[in-house]
Amino acid sequence: MPEIARFYGIIIKMFFKPKEHDPAHIHALYNEYVGLFDIQTCEMTEGDMPVRAQQMVKEWMAQHKDELLDMWKTQQIVKLSPL
Image 1 (cartoon, one colour):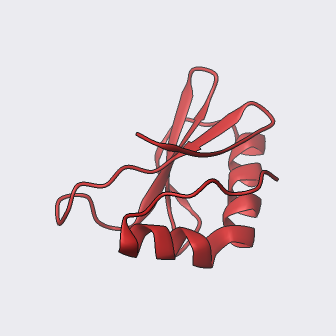
Image 2 (tube, helix red, strand yellow):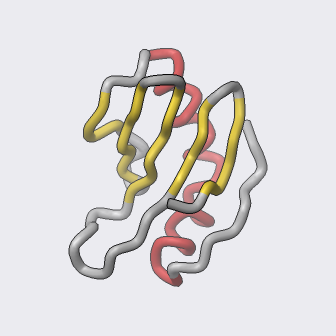
């Protein structure tokens, strides 16, 4: 799973598997915690990340929403700036 950003100990990754992996989302890892975040809503849909880490991921996603959606559609990963 390619890494697209890293900040405050949080690693953001995106994985593609055509037609089997919708809705568009990212994976966020923070120590032993994991969260899946919907790109459209910026909400965590699965996982156990602490609230503060979730807030940072949501803030970062809001700043990069268009870029994340473009990556999902084109399946071309680029590194994005951290929070």
